[in-house]
Image (cartoon, rainbow, N blue to C red; front, side, top):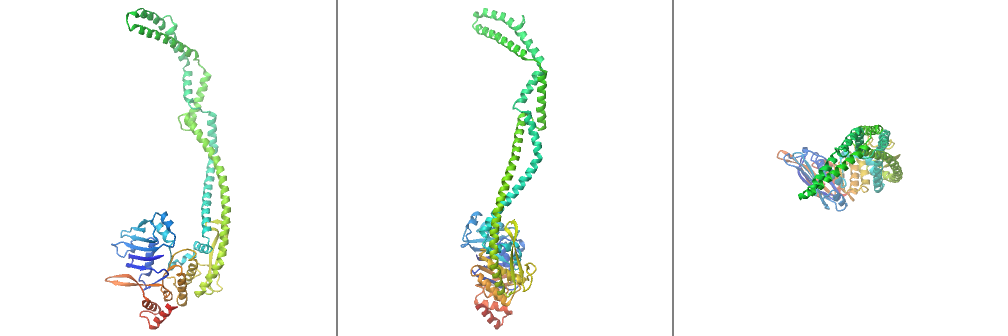
Length: 551
């Protein structure tokens, strides 16, 4: 609940502070004095946007600060998740600089507006004069019924399953689109893979083929050159080896005359043996080398095929072709896996649909069960507020479809007068009727939706007299379990306050500012009397005020 609110440099407020009762705090005051401006400031605390137009003094920043007592509300997990220091007495602050920069803090930790809203929405329900519109909203109506039906746990489980279900449906759609695209590619990829399979690619083959092509294309030149080399080395009478034999003998004959010559003679003789071996190898290669036109054609055709495939796939080697072949195999296997994944996902979605429809049926049954008592309680409260013949009917309509909240649509129908046709709230209820209906609904769901603080800004719009008195009694009853803050023009409602504040305008030199003060018992009598009859109040009005305070 809100312990206190401090406002500095906001609109026509220079500086005010207000401490709130744990039960019912009433704020009254002069027209235009700034009562609703205070609610605007509180809206800043709840994360609403603002600009420099709210600054009272354009040279100083605006600061709005609220102190909340969180001791009963188990919000430690929220603070831990947001990495904010938790304190049972938590301070929320908004600042707006003259430059238009706005900042938000929770316990002096800077936070985003979204974080501020997430916290304060768990603490405060701010019902302003025109926020009766929310009772016309289908989501709000569903929230009301679910709160009364105690559907919180089941609804959370349903929504979690529904999110997973919707995610799987989106995934299935993507997979099916992928299959459509894959089917268009499949035939072409199969053709490409078949072509590569038929080529029987082998690592290193291209280099071997190019070597074979060179040998076959130059076979005659190879054979002629090697035979000439062999003849020149060993086969002719005047061959190199024969000439070397005579020279080697000469060297050996003089080897004993010089210490280095024996080794040199051996080396010389070794050269002869090596040339003989070289000649033999030349002869072997020459004999093995034959021109084979058929083989050359085969090699050329094979090279043409490989180069054609390389050009087709924009690569430069058979290694890269083999990699493409492997990738095509993986892709085609992936297409097969897609079909299996789709089948598995369809089964999972089918199971989820069954689970969701079962949970939806449970939610629906609990909603239907909660509707009748809710309608009866609303009827009693409306009767209390002088709307004896008014009727609120809640329709829970089975859509036979899975929706984010179940299988139902919830609709509130309203008739203000006896014999009137039940219609959707929008357009059939006056401002005063809407205010009363909103108060009745919110008072019934207040315990079901655990909001520590409820704020009503001019909930008494369009009502007075006995109706206003009954509104005050409802607010008083509501305040026994909740902190309630109400801005009102009604003396009947003001009389029910546990704590009463008066907002007034003050003229300081050439400026008008807002002030606020807490009223004691005598001041309350005087203020309520003014609200009854005007300023100055009559003695009769003062007596009426005393009677109202005693009722």
